[in-house]
Amino acid sequence: MLADPENLSAETNTPAMEGLSPLPGPSALAPREIWKLRDLVLFLAFVPFALVVSKLIVLVGYAVLRPFTGWQVKVEAAQTGTVFMLVQQCILYAFALAFLFLLAKLQHQQPFWKSLGWKNPGAKQVAGYLAGGAALAVATSWGLWLFPDTQAFPLEKLFDSRTTSYALGVFAISFAPIVEEVVFRGLLFAIIEGAMGLRFAVLITALLFAGLHIQEYWHAWNHLALILGVGIVFSLARGMTGSLTPSIILHIGYNALLMTGFFTSQHFRAASGF
Image (tube, rainbow, N blue to C red; front, side, top):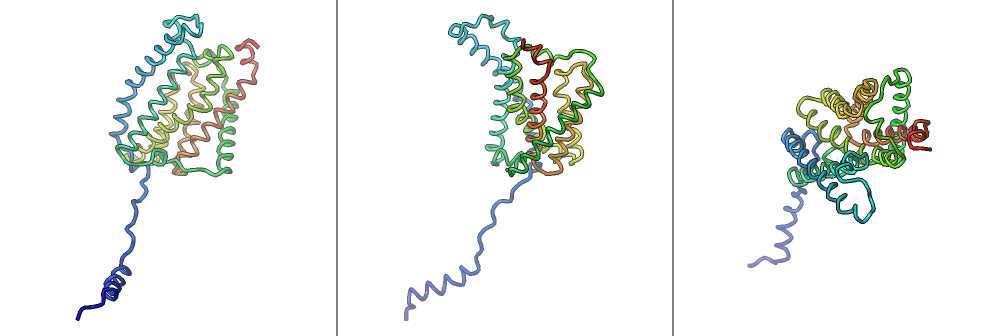
C-alpha cells in the first residue's frame, strides 16, 4: 500500500529540518589580518606613477584653461605656485585612496573603510575626539612658546597670500587628515601590527608620520619633535581603541584649531595684506 504523499512529506521533512542550522557567516577580519606586506609594496610602486600622472593632469588642465580665464602666469612658472602644488597633491591623494579602495575590494574582497579599522562613531565620541585634537593643538602651541622658532622654514613661506592661506587651511582640515590617517594609521599600522606587534606599530607609524613632514619643517626641529609627539598620540589612539576613527577625528580637530589660531593671528594679517 502506497503511503500518503502528504504524510510522507511531513515524515521526511520534519526531523531533517529540525536538525539543520543556518551556516555561520564569514567572521569579520581585523585590519592586521587583511593587509600584508605585498599590499605595501604595490602601494609604494603605485605612488611614483600617481605623482607623475597628477602633475600631468594639472599641467594640461592649466594650459587648457589659461586662455579662457585670463591667467597671466606661464605654465612653467605656475608649477612652483602654492595653489598649483596643492591641487596636484589633492589629485595624488585621490589616486592613493582609489588604489587602496581597489586593493580592498578586488584583492581582499573587504569593505574599504572597515578593512582599515573604521568604526562609525556616535555624536559624543565625535565631539570628544575633536576636543581632544584641539587640546593637543593647545599643548603643541605651548611647546612652541617654550621652544620658539629660530629661523624660517619652508611651510611658513607658503602662507604668502589670503588665497593660498585659505586653500591650505581647507586642505589641512578636510583632505589631509583623512588621507594621511588612512595611510599611516590604516594601511601601515595594520601591516606593521600584523608583522611585528602593536607596540612597534605605534612607534614606527609615529616616526614615519613625523618623517612625512621633514621637508615642510626643514631646520625647524622643534616643530618636528612636537609632530612626533602628536603622531604618537594618534597612533596610541588607534592602537588602544582598535579603530581608525579616533585618529582621523583627532587629526581634524588638531589641524582645525591650529588653522583657526593662524587665521586670527597677526602673522596671517601681515602675510595676507590685511
